[in-house]
Length: 480
Image: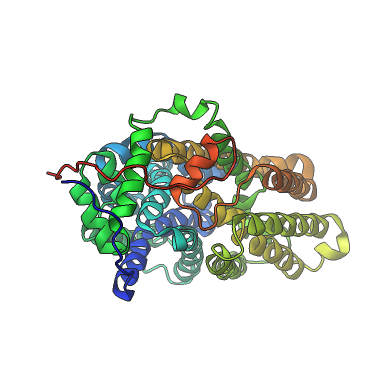
């Protein structure tokens, strides 16, 4: 049975709602990513007392989850290609749910660390699997918006974790305050599990396994229009990318620049210091003169809300203004915010202002990050690699992201102790400038481009060319 020529279906509102709903369900993996990384911000204030933590143990409590995330990023690509995007996300939902419950009842600090590493494996895996799943489900016209569901969900998860921290700091339900803070993550874990059971596998994964009838059915259910033409384009890309992608192939001459962009953005997203704010915001506010733990968590919660609202800017404009405009303007804003934050701690008069000046500087910084480097890195990581290298490419970028996240997080308190708050934040501002130059010189504009067109961009020496179906006689195989 051959593929027919392009059909003339339409993308009905019902199908479009289905795509949005499916993307939102998958993005619960991002919400868990955000919650499980953000919850430590407030919880550490109580873990210090429970386990009598030294500053070095405090850094370990914060950063151990990132060790697991690096492991998750390494294994996610292969698991994602073997099991499929859907089954991988179902497995991650189980891991998140069990990890949340067990972490909440850790009897010792060592047990807590082990469980946080295990949860980190889920975080690192979700960080690469979710964007790939959404990018392969979404039509090209709204792919950017839908992939940014992931980053929006991350910021919502972070914000929710801050408010949950504040709630249980005041009303711990007869437990130690940090226990219900961690246990609450089981709720979105269960929702992700149930939601993915009724969600489709991606057509590109089906096609990569030769399951063309399954790919056709999925495409028809989520798009409706031009299903046969879309299948032919996917087939042509898979014929070119006929073998299983390997890490070594990412270094091939024509693909190497995609790796440079993916890994470069991954590193720079962390070296601008974002997760020092996410993990240590209450500590920063205490250093700036905020008197109590609850007040510091409250100020941190405001930062979390700003993070969510600012990510909505990216959601609204990424498919209109493009990726590069958001990245470049965001880098400029981050540099300004970090310079001001350094001045707050450098000038005695500003530091005397306490939380007010600190909060203002952090808001400038968070707004700028949240509509640029935050969401656009994850979007580009899911877009820029060829089909057979997409999972391993996204996993490689994610691994570097978590590695740099770990390096920044595990050194923050020590760096502040060595050179002071001001020079620490100014160091991050220098990386912001490097990120600005990197985005201007190397990052391509992928707005409105099909994934196959982006692949052709790299294969043609970073030149945009059209992609048209090359074959109309493809023999599909029915899936099992």
